[in-house]
Structure formats: structure tokens, C-alpha cells
Image (cartoon, rainbow, N blue to C red; front, side, top):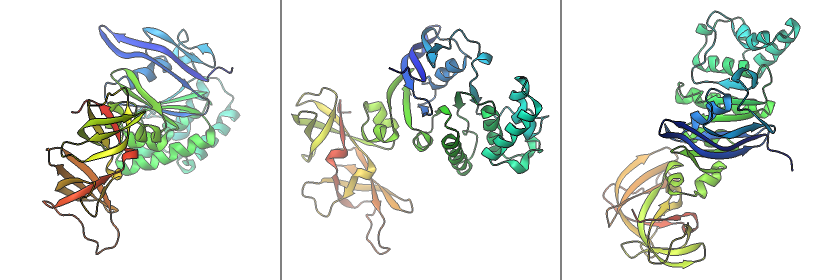
Amino acid sequence: MTAPFLSICGVCKRFGDVAAVDNISLDVDEGEFVTFLGPSGSGKSTALYMIAGFEDPSAGDILLRGASLVPVSPDKRGIGMVFQRYTLFPHLSVADNIGFPLRVRGCARAEITAKVADMLRLVRLEKFAHRMPHKLSGGQQQRVALARALAYDPPLLLMDEPLSALDKKLREEIQFEIKRIHNETGVTILYVTHDQEEALRLSDRVALFNHGAIEQVGSGRDLYERPATRFVADFIGNSSFLRATLERRDGACGRVEFPDGSGLDGVALVGEIAAGAGVAVMLRPDHVHLAPDAEGALGARVVATTYLGDCLHVVAATSWGQTIDARVPLGASDMRLPEVGERIALRCEPSRARAFAGGK
């Protein structure tokens, strides 16, 4: 069996009594784009810094192409790194910034010139070769930093929240560029962000961190549609969690009953949940629809609406005091939309819902 390109094997990092990273393991294929996603303080950046060599693991090992990186100093690992701050040399031009790691490695002048030209084309900054960093926009500076990190053909590129300082529109533009560059170069990328939309847009797989551990690894679709824990369901996308009772269990699915007597049949059950137990039923707004009548539907009262262009976001209150979100697609311009205070009936897609233990 071929060894994984990168293996993180039972890695821990403790700072005194605090476990910043707690026994994580992950294999990454060559050419894959994997994002470490999670809230602030969840351990994702610390994990990245251990791969880069800026932090030493308290336990475990990190293997690149089957060889341990732990005893190797950061400057000998040959790993590219892009930070949130662009860290460009202010006294060097764009071309000289990109060529700097090649000069440090003693490459020939002709080789440096050719490689810098290739990198400028890759990040589409050919016309800016002689410009100084302070005359570039934030997005352009980040593209220079990316070109510099790729100039010496590293086997692995690490990116630590590289776009968090940019505004939303520019961030989306650079995300597109990063994805294009990944597709063109085939470089293996580990990317850290707390922005779930960014993670879903860029990644082949996402590793979701929580309190130093990895809660779930999978594609964005896996995490959104098949969350393995309540934390994943709550962190990825928007969800309503309604109290219910598991009325009947049938293998991995079951029928749940809400406090008003309405129910859903065929809801996927996450974990071992016995019939009669309280559950929290996850419902995504795009899986909740307006029903033409109350039969078999969940009754609620509209408490807020937000126009989002392609849909109306509706927040409604159930009879037992919880709220549920729904997205109503906007069709014809004269279609009637629910108003605040109005009683509505909502139909949920049971095959898209998930029930977790605990009814809170």
C-alpha cells in the first residue's frame, strides 16, 4: 500500500495544562486541497504551525512522503507558507519579492528570471513586476505572497487565514484565483480559515476543528448534509434545532413527534437514541417549505422576514416557543409572501433532517 502524501498521526500540543491540539490524525493525498475550519481557539492554526515547524508537537508525528518532519528545522522542510499579513519586503519590487527564496537557495540568475516570469503569469501580475509593495492593493499583495511561496515548487503549501484582512468582494475574487492556481499547479494545500463559506468554496475536503480535536472530515456536502455531531450541524450552514421525542425507531431512521403533536417520519438518527428519548431535530432553512394547508404540517407564526433577492428568509415561532427558519423562493413578481404576524404552515423534508440526542 502506498503511504499517504502527508500523515498527521496522533498529534498533540499542550501549553501547560491546556491542550491546544488534542490527538488529531489525518491523511492528505498529493494534490488535495484540505481546509482546517473552526472557531477561534479551536486548534486549527496551531496544527498548521506544527506542520510548518514553528511549533513542536507534544506527542505524535507528522510524516511527509513517509518521512517524519518533526526533527527537521522549518527552513529545511521546503514547505511554502502564506500568512494573513502579506510579509512582503517593502524595499523590494514585486519581481524581487517573488525571486527572493530562489536567490536564498543559490539558483542561477537565468533560472530566477524565468521562474519569476512564470509566477507573475500565474498570478496575473506581469505588468506589476517593477512596482513596490506599497503601491499595490491588498489583493495584489496577497497574490505576490502566493507567487513567492510557490516560486521554489514546494511539495506542500500552507495558508493561514490569508484573506481575512480583505473585504468580502475582494476576498471572493482572490478565492477564485487561489482555486484556479491550485488547479493549474496541482500543489497540495492546507488552508486555515474560520469562514465556512470560504472553506466550502475552496476545498476538496474540510477538517472541522472544535476544542483542539477534529469533529469531522469530509467534503463540504458531507458536512452540510450528513453532519456527524451536533456541533458540525450547528457550525456548518444555518440550522433550526427543534425539540421533539423519538416516537419510533426503524434502524438508522425514525419518527419524531414535536410538542404540538405534528411529526416527521424517516428522520435520520445520529448516534444511539432509544425510542421515547428527547431529541433535537436539525432543519435547514432550504429544506423547510410553505405548505398550502395545515394537514401534516408544522404550524407557526411569522416573526420576521428578510428580502434576499432570490428568496425571502422567514423566521417563524412554533406554538411551544422555538423558532424555525425557512427560505421561500421568489417566483412571479405578484406572488403572495407571508407577512409578520401571519399564521403559516411549514412542511419539512424528513430525508434531509437529522435528529441528535438531547431535546434542547
